[in-house]
Image 1 (cartoon, one colour):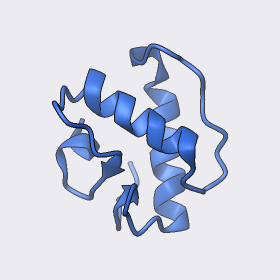
Image 2 (cartoon, rainbow, N blue to C red):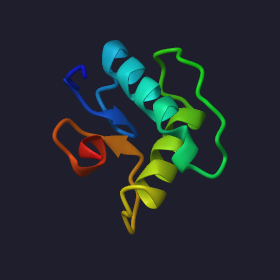
Image 3 (cartoon, rainbow, N blue to C red):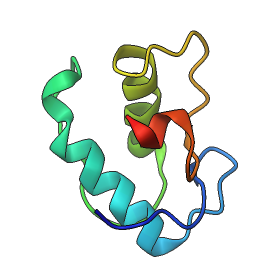
Length: 79
C-alpha cells in the first residue's frame, strides 16, 4: 500500500497523489457503502469524494461525527 503524505478531504492538503490514493481505496471498499457508486479517479477533491469519505467514516469507521477528511495515521486511514 502506498503511503499517505498529507490529509485528503475537507480542509486537507489534498496533494494530487494522496487524493488519487484515497479515491482508489474508497473504490476498493465501495461494497461496504450504501450507494456503491465508484468515484472517478480524477485526483481532485470534489463533492463526491468528500461525500464518500463521510459515508465511509460513518458506516465503516463508526465515527459519530464524520469530518470528511482522511489524515495520515488517522483512524479513517487505518480502517
